[in-house]
Image (cartoon, rainbow, N blue to C red; front, side):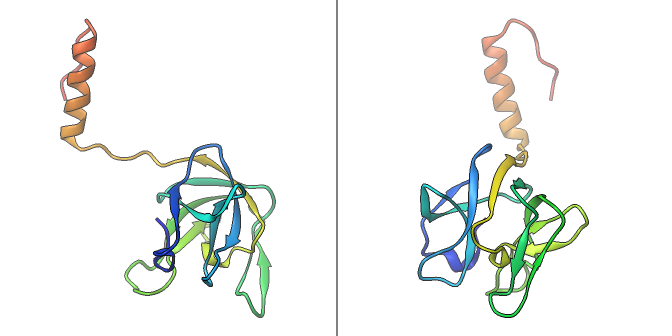
Length: 143
């Protein structure tokens, strides 16, 4: 997911093991994740992507206040998806609190620990079973 405000921004999916940096994207008021080598490309994450920050996470409202959370790990997700035209991308922390990605202070480093497991349709499971069975002598259990 990448927030609605990045629709004109170049994007790519996150990769396990890469280190990202929080940044403000040119021409927007939106903050998000990018690679240091590609600062103008937003790195999008699937809900459930796990991140480890180098330091305790800091966030602000861009104007009047800033705060820190005593956590360095979090899980990417979305809040209030039913409300249009607002930021939804957020990080959930172990205490259950959420912080919008666009509120993360710039310059923080985070490593992608794990991508979520994607669900498989019954058709895809059957296709994989057939392919494996065709290449192996041992039978597979039925679906």
